[in-house]
Amino acid sequence: MKAVVINQYGSKEELTEQDVTLPELKANQVLVKEHATSINPIDWKLREGYLKQMFDWPFPIILGWDVAGVITEVGSDVTDWKVGDKVFARPETTRFGTYAEETIVDADLLAKIPENVSFEEAAAVPLAGLTALQALFDHGKLQKGEKVLIHAGAGGVGTYAIQLAKQAGAYVITTASEKNHELLEKLGADEIIDYHTTNFADVLTDIDLVFDTMGGDIQKSSFSVLKPNTGRLISIVGIADEALAKEKNIKAESIWLQTNGKQLQEIADLIAAGKVISVVGEVFPFSRQGVYDAHALSETHHAVGKIVIKMAD
Figure: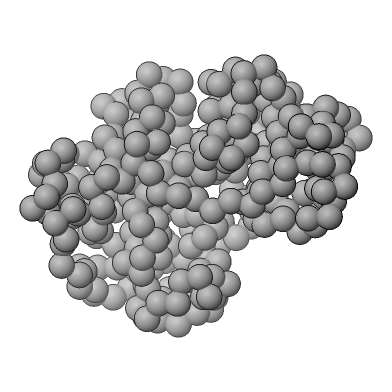
């Protein structure tokens, strides 16, 4: 099958198209013919070699860990899924990722694509949606009526986080440039701070939970807006200053996504009910150039919503 791979770590120039043979299907797995995948920062961070210690794989490596498509083969132990089912998933992180015509997924990680959702919209969900859900609820313990600050609300993870927090009955504050304010209001944000003109730390206090997708100075400033003793900060980019958290008696935790088909199905049900939508900012074709251009956009940190790769029909 055709895949876009890397044969060594480095810049976007390392992306190349080649034929790859997948390993044999295990009893608990399915083979999915891909209709769409999407781009996440882990893709190009891994491409550049930043995650080498975590995932020391042989080359070639197929990047990408979001898939939407149709099941074409099922393992001998798979009973809940059949050939022809339209599914999406955040597969396990292996070197056989989803920038490919086909991918293998553990059956327990699959969710059903709702009837009202396109393959592109479905492919946008898994990694970003699960990250948002786990950060807010599994780790952040967000409760109805609490105030949550979601940094970079117009990004891939942010757009899902706003909607999920709103569904849970939280008061949602987010940071975004002015051009994205209308979109974020539609998604349910109660308060939007234009980071170009206003420092959020000057205008916010008594926040229950900060969802940090940025790190650096933004993370440091976030400690000052949290409620002392009960405030929580959940980050997906690491905690730079543990002492700051201790000083204010704030729970600060850096998290790594856990693959979870049951939680993905929960998000799928919200999407089916029209309570959550995918914001797809850009769609690129599945080719070496398409993936290259998608990485270039992702690396700017200014993409709106998710960047999706569409396979040929």
